[in-house]
Image (cartoon, rainbow, N blue to C red; front, side, top):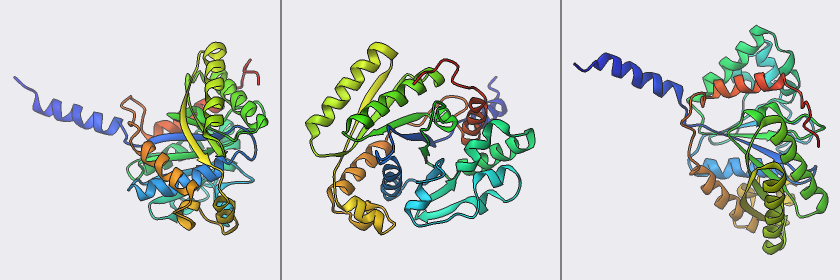
Length: 292
């Protein structure tokens, strides 16, 4: 005899266990590579694809809010400490795009007491049903990789063609490989003037990462050097919004269309509250041998 009630309960459990949301960390190979600009423009372009985007801004200095000329009054840390509700920390920066400042929260993650941890987890549980894609503007400072990036399903490493940025990108991959055990990354070459050079950067990085780190580096593509990008930044906006016909904007739109079709995880723990749990747990581990 078929247990229809049991089948329905199991079906409900699976619905609740999985999330459509894709969590993607964007990490700069070095300062000035343009990771924040990439996050901002991908968010705008993804919203045009009909995706509901949550931008988590882990940087305290040059960050997404600053790029938009905003000075947020609250941070995820205020939610964690009970000083404000999740809705008070969220900024709606475009249609279907919300920004959650998290610079102070990232620094506090290893020190949270149980009540603060639960508030953080509950915050992300409340965001799960209204989010399709999470874009994390992840910090890349010192020797400790971002705990939020550790929890993300995907990591995009953004480099520009200069040698310091390329070297920094490989160093970031090395740190995250050793600290997080992550075996796959995506590479986006920003501000490129020569697609052949960008392809060579990827080829060399992928070969070295495969040989020395047993790690896959997939080529996401390029964003061309375009004067419309800094011009849009001076106007506190995204290039896909201000100069939609520019080469950089068209490139971001193409990348967003591809990202929109990346398959969502079907593994247990794919919900956003589980993402937050992983970030908290990962924040308590040092690099322990994960050299630069």
